[in-house]
Length: 444
Image (cartoon, rainbow, N blue to C red):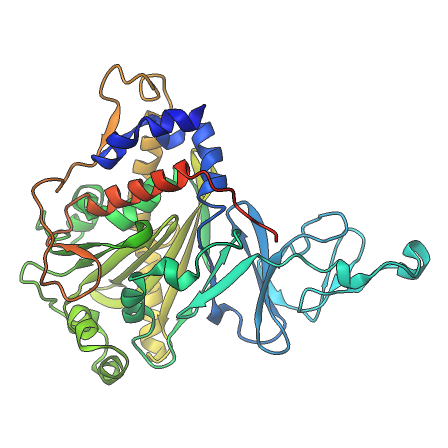
């Protein structure tokens, strides 16, 4: 069985060698859908995307289409986007505002609480015995939020979202809770499909500043980023629980040329009010936060711009697996609500030019992800007998980089971002979930 073959790889995975055949193997992919995407917390939306009662958005929770809507009490509800009559996708729009949702197939209608409220010719074709209360929309088993970020989980027995995030909450508080009013999504999530495997894209953001200087060489040549080959290494790579991690990138001096990522000084009193002294210390020195929440949520807090001026923004993105060699990429642009409108608009334009679907840096990454897939699907790369060394190398910092006990934030922090500590932690947690024997409980 495939699971037995995976278990034989345990020592290699724990020692920084990831067998290449595990990347795109179809049987491994099926296990991932069940044991990883069926049990972990997956990002769905930000609360600012649903402002008024009746507003709705449609998302995906791995392979399940999801309908989120705000009811008349201001509560956000999440349901399987499927009519309970014959299973047709109920809502086909990406977003909008309605008092009720009507199925395009047979006309069954549902209110903002997911209750079935109307059946075409109901009394005539179903009689009096049909109980509409038994045929409402199916709610997502678990829905919880943190700092405005809405997550869903298909496993009713999963640990709470806050327990799952663990020490990542400390860093999320800096990025999401630093200013009065919190963050808001600007525009709609950008979305496109790429030739890639979700493990490699997640790892690229969460664990691999090492690629920046080479992959994004064009940005160096255009003077968008420094020419120092080590510039993305300065700072700390922080390993957190459950496969999460974050790179707190500074500069060669350990400081940032622009305090609080260049945010306007008018915002600083908010930061001092909303953050602890330790969080302020980290935030004041950082140039970029980049990391991820396992399995497929990544984030980047950086500065982008045009015409020589740079403006801070935060992006969240998910890598939704479509197949072993394809992902659907979703990218949310977020910004502090309290910032001036002019700053927000300039920041958004800078984001689109660099990390939009056609952005300079985005195209660089996409090419490499496709090449990983192409090189991992042949017979040599998928040789399970290991007759030669067909493993990906994650040995950077394995035995020559020690944790820094003086770092003020939670987690195990290493004094360089050019290391594979987060990647190895991700692979370890991946292995634990894949090897787990417990069955997922979707419905009680």
